[in-house]
Length: 279
Image (cartoon, rainbow, N blue to C red; front, top):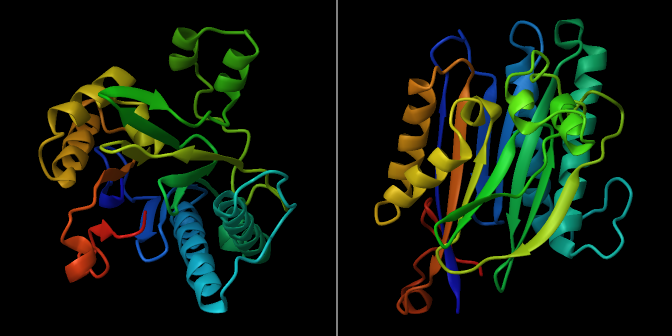
């Protein structure tokens, strides 16, 4: 079955912060969707996250015009072309943020998380991430976290040193162990997956996941399954604000839907900012 991608996104400053260091972007012509959460003094976090989003999107736009994906960083054995391209784009974003942070005093120490999805043909899509922003999938009404946080507390959980409950209440829950711009090189986690009709992907910053439990994310997405995707996105943002809104909040959502019969005839999907006519 041919699928199309519906997309919706929103970023909110939250209830406490004075500026928004989150950024998101997408280009449906090339099937690339990105959320970044910046960090750093003054406005440097905002600079880092925007730089990362722009660099990743530009990589795919330029690769399309050149007719191939340039490999940046160490080639990944056994990875699909989609996944390798996503890894290369993240490597390029890391270099951009790192070089800017080391050459501009006002941006010293800045960095960013990133989560990204690269959608290809025949239902194949790749995910990549660095840091503690997350990607979730809701399939058949059940939510699943597709990424593993690169954070100190989650590393402790993985090693059996603390429980998930202890991690939620840890005083060091905001410390991440991998970020764009932190070092000259970075190792993104990248994976290939297959979409099914009505799968929903949620890319979000930790301003969402610190305020809204996974079960509530699932309930909100399911409650809005028959509405335009923006309704679910807005409901998630409002839930995070009601939960405290202690950080910036960003949600970027994708829904894989059956391609209508008339799409091929009338070209539905190709020019719309809300649809990707690709898989």
